[in-house]
Length: 355
Image 1 (cartoon, helix red, strand yellow):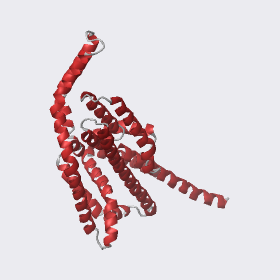
Image 2: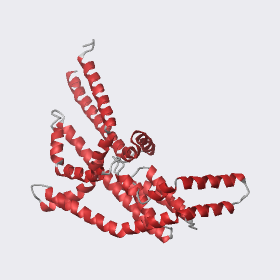
Image 3: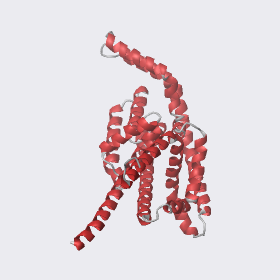
Image 4: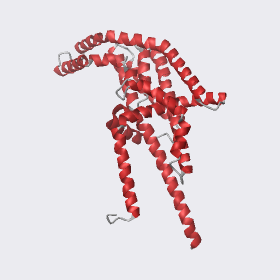
């Protein structure tokens, strides 16, 4: 065909199918993002469901699933009833006191080292105009942070679809896995091992991510409250949500905390900055490596590249998925190298025996 041998034609068709698959994934990336979020949410619930299922020892996992969802709803409802009211009150207080931030900035401009200097005055006038221009966005950011994070796909209905999809993934996960493995006849064992590695990787990643976010919320709530930082619980909740976004999220949380503290007239901003820096070092070099396995850990340069590339491809969704996607690609690459080495060893042994 077209002067090509069978092997070259097969490789050409394989490359064409891979490119077609990548193009299809790109065009349906928003819908695919919803299913990926549902999958990750299912991995958050899987350890609890598996624990309950072992205690029930029934023929089906449906009762364990219902108990798991009921417990999660109960925990979330209890958390929202205690913490959510405080966050809402502080968000309303922040919105009400926001106009005073502009007056404080104007007073700071008048009390600057050179009140009559044109550069100093122009800087604060520009800052004031920017704050006035984006005032509504700044005020509405805190109350809507959860909504924006959950509806990153662009539709509120996705918030309802994600738990439903997670329910079916947990319920029919084994059947889906068997159907997928049925596609591999000769290499079923290799596919089973790869799926087991992917399963373990996602479990460890989601568990570590949840623990890191909870540690951030607890630590920030305690320390910011002890330092008497204004709106401490609200800022800790914002940091909790932004912790889900790699690299960019923690930096944005730190800037928001410092910015709100400065605008609120907090006197110990230096101590706050020191705490944020120390906590980030502790989390990145002590807590995170302890929670993440060697298969999940990635080089910082690769993380930075993945975050920026994911942001260009899929925005916030791409940034959120950059780390697990890179970890999966790394796992598949090592699996491919292992399979190639085993195949090379199998082909070299007959050559040695024949010689």
